Image (cartoon, rainbow, N blue to C red; front, side):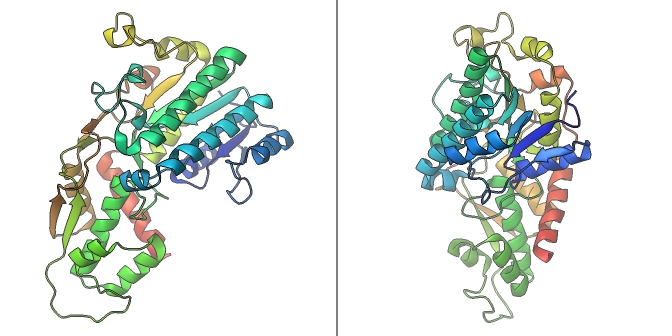
Length: 375
């Protein structure tokens, strides 16, 4: 167990993941959680990061800071995604080591695994094939973070661990339609479609002010006036929601509060408990040709072990939000990886399981979304 007086530096506390971890640490009674805003500490600035660690004694680091985004953002800014994530990881991990930090938790992503990896994806699949092109730069940065933690463990006997979550959602998510992931984008699009059904243009204006610009194609499909305060009309065509791709890919989703619980659970495990669980199973043919999991890797998947198609997800979100119109799939847009389901058997064997169902989680996330706009 981690001492409740331990000094924990949580990097990235302002994001969805970091804020959930902070809530969990507070709930569990940890009294010395250190955070810094981007304005106070730019994690891409090596000198600033080194100075922070020299001036602030730290026992544990949770590295939840990252440049993140959906398919469109990854395709538009690939250089930013690889360079900024590499800088953040390198600066924090090395400065932690230089200043005697023995315990660090690095958070990655399921996109580290090959596009055509056997499903569900086991930890041994790492480095076993070509990555999904739409997020390859981000994935390569995250793989580098895993290997950096492993390498410091091998050379310096540190206790740096890596946790690979599946697709995440929950409070404090990013709903900007230029950079959001699939589930928050679906929640916002269905909400806007519901408001368009009601011709509640004032509410749409408030939503846009809070969560970012509504793209022109979505405005057109939903019949939203071109300008805030535009003319109200007595009759408009029924709004239709146009979504990218075919809706056929499968995706797995984990509520961010469950991830936060998993982070603390893994941090509290002793090395002698993790080592046998994290290693390849004897006789595993997949691992035999690619011994990518060393005793020092400490790599664990975290998810629900269940997935559904994007089409099924969209129908669930539409039902929860209360939009009654049609959903149209634009097959000219990319689908991304056909299937991304994690094998979570290692974490399950350690005794951890998620507590929040997908429907329950989406409903609570939508309530938080409504509160954020109202506030």
